[in-house]
Image (cartoon, rainbow, N blue to C red; front, side, top):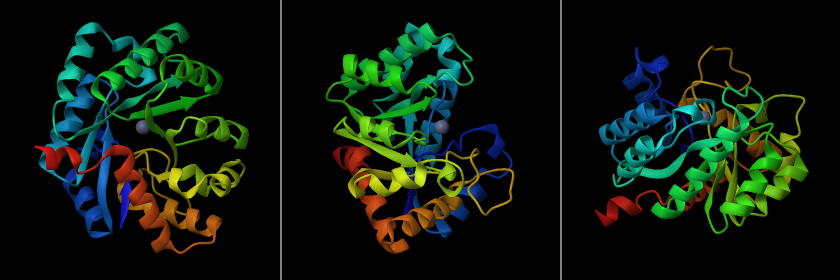
Length: 261
Ligand SMILES: [Zn+2]
C-alpha cells in the first residue's frame, strides 16, 4: 500500500533485526523502500541490501552534508560506478546542513554542486537534505540544477519556502514524522502542496512519528505519516496511499531500470 521513500535501514541500528524489520514492514503494507546512502560505505551497503530484496528495496548513492568532507574524486568515481546497478534509483542523499554544520559551509556547497553534476551525468533524481540552508540550496539549484528532478526529503520549511521549492518543476516535497508534531508549519505546507508533488517517508531510524513512543523509527511506521496527511487533506488513507505511491514510482522511475535489464 505505501512506499517509504526514505529509510536508512543499512545503518548499524538495524544490525540486530534488519530482516525482521523489513519483513514487518512488508507484512504491514509497505510495498517498497528507498534506502539512501550517506557516504560511500553506506551507499554500497544500501545497494547490497537492494540486491537482497529485488523490487522491494531500492538504493540512492551519495554523501550526506554531515560527511561532505569524505567526498573525493575517488569517491565520486565509485558512486558513479554504483549508479550502473539496476537497484540504484537516485543520487543522494546529499544537501546542505547549516544547523549542525559538521562540515564547513564551502565544502558542503562544493559537494552539493558535485552531486548535481553527477545527477545530470546519470540522469537520476536527487534526494536533497536541507536544514537551515534553504537560501543556499535555492541558489545552487538555480545555478547548477536546472532541469533536474528529485525530492526535498523530510521537508521542514514554511509555506513560502515550500512554494520556492515547488518552483523547481521536477521536484516534490516529502513529509516525515515532524508532520505529526505540533508547532511547525508543516500541516499548512501539506495542505497547499499539489497532490502530485507529495511523497511520504520515515527517515528511519530517526524522526519517530506521533503517537508512537519508541526510540527507533522503522519503515512500518510510514503509515502514521500517511494517516496525518489523510487527515490534513480530508482524504481517505487509501487515496493518500495510492497517490503517494504513484508519485514515488514516477519520481524515481521504480521498476523501469529492472524492465530495461
Ligand atoms: Zn536521511
